[in-house]
Figure 1: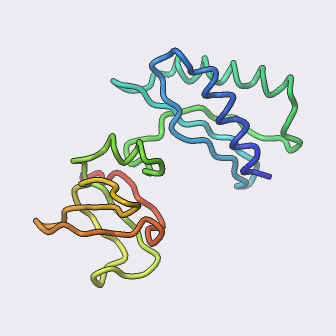
Figure 2: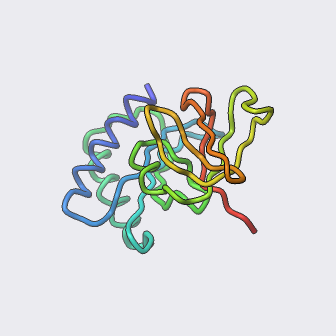
Length: 151
C-alpha cells in the first residue's frame, strides 16, 4: 500500500513542479509512531521554506479532495538534507566527484562501510575512488548510499 501512495504522490508532485526549477528528489510514506508522508525537494542554490510551503499547500488540497490515504498522517515537505541518500540514477550523475559513503549488506574488500569519491554509476555498479584506487560496488549489494559529510 505504501508504494502505491508514494507513486501517486510522486506523480502529483511532479505535475505540480513541472515548469519550475524545483526538483522532486524522493517521496516516502512510512509508519514511525504515526504515519508520515515525506516529500523531498531540491533546486540549484538550495530549496527555500517558501518552496516547501507552496508544494505542501498544493499537495494537501489535492490529497484532501482525492482522499487516497485512509490512515491519518503528517505531510512533511523539505530538503533532503546534507547527508542525503542517493537513490536514482540522476542522483548519482549529479554527485559525481562528491564524497559518498556506501553501506553494504556484506563486506566488500573487508569493509561494510566504504567512503570515497563518486566516479559514477556504470552498468548498475557504483564506481568510487578510495585512496587512489577505483572500486566497483554492485548496486544491489549496497544497503544505502549517502553523501559523506566530514566535520
